[in-house]
Image 1 (cartoon, rainbow, N blue to C red):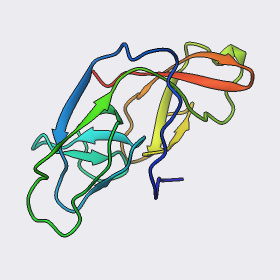
Image 2 (cartoon, rainbow, N blue to C red; image 1 turned 135 degrees about the vertical axis):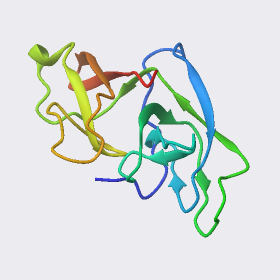
Image 3 (cartoon, rainbow, N blue to C red; image 1 turned 180 degrees about the vertical axis):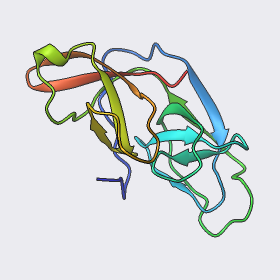
Length: 138
């Protein structure tokens, strides 16, 4: 289910991956923990918004740009790292399997039939029932 509030996924260890900042697209709300893409204009948007051309990572801050006709004036940084994330159906045999998303908070093991169909990462491990995904937006 898509995020409606900030949700900070647990990170596995210290930050290690690349992080880049982007201005938020007009009319978009980005929550902490949102899986995000950039559009052709280089503006950040949540994954389920039409027009995403490249997955860039997990949003590390909140920005509300609803009601604005221009891109936000503050860049939201998106992290690429290892996060605890729910992946329905993930089992030990799923380690190293690619992971896909249907919205900014819903992951799955199969390529979606519509929307953003690119990979957002790989399962790197399952520990005590928690699935860890290496988010790869670069």
